[in-house]
Length: 130
Length: 130
Length: 130
Length: 130
Image (tube, rainbow over all chains, first blue to last red; front, side, top):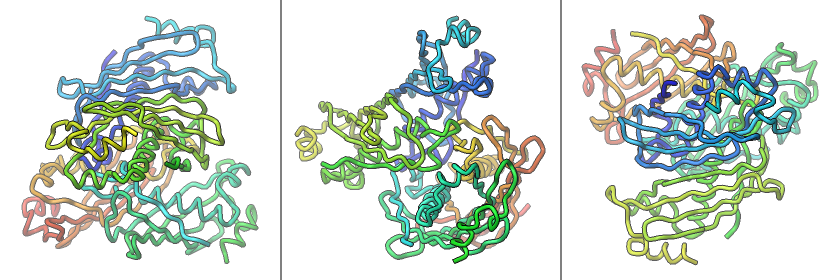
């Protein structure tokens, strides 16, 4: 798996001149999308099966500010997987220095109900387990 | 019809310390939503009929910058209405001074095709004409 | 202290039709700004003193989705205060039901260095302690 | 000059499942930043000279919707340059089809006053003229 890279946009920076903290949550989503694509289970494939994947929780620990034009490298790992939910951990680095550590927890829903991942999406479950 | 008011958020300001220009397009949408609500034809009512209302064009002329905590008053008028599309004009003021002039053109679509407003939504057509 | 209210905008909703999870982080900022204003210590006053207040960490636990036009009431409390940082806890409700629980930690910086809140901003420290 | 490419993010799509119209204004900014970088006159270089470059006007004509994961190619040209302002025209294509046509007008400001481009930034003026 390769790491994902995000270049900070002008419109992502705030009055302090730094990347607004809410944007890291969006960058984590970009990296997660890329990660699932690399697994062959993109959002589009999952959505085409009538499944949506809501976010249950998200957290960010900001270590160093970044700014316009900075290149943020995001390393994504599956840090936990259970019957109904799974967790990603994100290490975001800029020029080698950790700028933000993030986590997010997700489930899969079909017709408004959470699905047991190992049953409904066994292939993805196996891949996430690895 | 009352004017709509938007208070500028911290996260809407950029590195120059001013409201990022893209946000005026969003503020215009907020004012349009409010305008249609006042007419009794909110987005939710229109969407419930299976109709969506894409934006055909949008423009902004920026007169003065605004910043965090500024209160922007947006006056919305229907400036043109034709068979298949209609146009809003927005006058945005802050403390009485015009800060931005905007326009947007819209149509209504049903099952992927534009609808003749006067036929499909005659009550709304009458209201927009007034 | 009154609670802060945010009405969900059309542009804040995603392809699932619900408020995009990243926007709760922005709503928390809006509520925090309002809270500090109520204390008489708005961002503008703090920034005017040459002090900035970066976010150290943020977390959200999503309980129920919200959507376009929903009114979210945000109750803010100071849940912890230390020498160099302080923490807000946010309870976000929609029609009485908890939709999201959030937390954020912050510090104050002057000339690139963290300040001891009780020393540099004693009046605010006293207010946050109450 | 190469064209700039933007991949549509999940969070850029709205309840209609398409790229929210306001995001094209941001994509135009990304393309403009890239264009000026290619000229050797990035925002950072200009800002380092104490010059800011506010947007005077912006417009978009939406031709076809785009959605999550679409690759939008943006061709940028300088369509007009005058003493105090200059205009970019953007042709945005997805899979060869024009999806949006945009324009934006800009000036340069120093100490709160517009500058005569040919005098203050003669090298950039020459490049934009070409």
